[in-house]
Image (tube, rainbow, N blue to C red; front, side, top):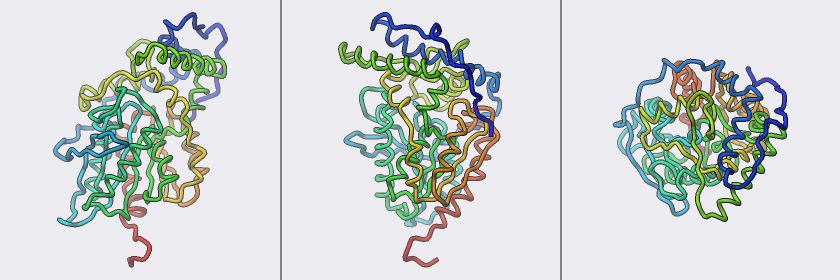
Amino acid sequence: MTEASTREEPGKEEIRQLPDRTEIVDVVMHVAALADARDWRKEARAVSTEGPTNVMPLVDPARRAEVRFESEGLQLAGHLYRARGVLEGGRAPALVMAGPMTSVKEETLPHYAERLQDAGYTVLAFDNRNFGESEGEPRQHLDTYEQVEDLKNAISYVLTREDVDPERLGLCCVCLGAGYGLEVAAMDRRVNAVALVAGGYNITDTYLGFLGPDGFRDYIENLGEARQSQHESGEIQYMPAVAGPPDYAPSAMPVEEAYEYYTRAHEREAPNWENRLTVASMEHIVGWNVLGHAHLLEQPLLIVHGTTDVLLPPRYALEVYERAPEPKEIFWVETHNHVELYDQEPYVPQALEKILPWLEDNLKGHVPDGDSA
């Protein structure tokens, strides 16, 4: 397993001080770029110096149907991939998916959903509130716990469908969505199995590692200043989700691989994705840490993670695995960066080669208590 190495903390002279609130948004975005002094963005570039040539083919939109369901009074837009090979009137096992930070249902998840659909699962991918085709204001605002609620309500919707077996419902989630999957499954026994890919489980300490103690302290203080400025002005403040070369900043995800992925996916398959995020979203993202709930899992757990992942370090995937009770498995994919597990060969197929038989054993072939085999 390859992990980010320990680095020197940035000096105080590298931290830009906040002269007044007129520059708050610039400062919040700029502090993320200060991590370059700790070489983590250079490390990301070192393993991703050229655009990928092995991007997976587009998924045929005819595979899926548009659906809508309610989450806390808001209508959320989803894509339902009906299980292949299920007799009319039959009930199929189901999987609810959640995806990467800022993503919409047309990104990343279809490359998993089509294979899961062919294997006999009904799969739901959806836009979180405030994103894509779903309702919610302010637009492009990411509140991690609201998105957790959206995932819970997506489960509720799927369980109302007459073509779904309620005793065989699982989660298959990617990136930040995998962190949501862990959080939901830890407290929701409607979920019968959990497969988590390239998961974001401890963003707080990841940022602390990127920025160092002084940089992290400045970052949190600047977020507070941004919140106060927004309260006083009444204006929603935005930042780019990704930015281009040479620095890929200022942005919420100031690395080359994120820029390449989101711009490519937007052009190829996700016209509803927007390259902006509320500044207030960063409070929720940086505060995200669900390691402490791993021990509450009772369902079978599969963790799939890349061996090299600067954005979401492998050590936190391993920590989830170590904290979780049995039954559990962890599977490492030899990667060069985080986004290879979004839409690239051979990484996504390798992940699915593990996920599919694991689901066959732990969900599709699950016999509810009281039933005979």
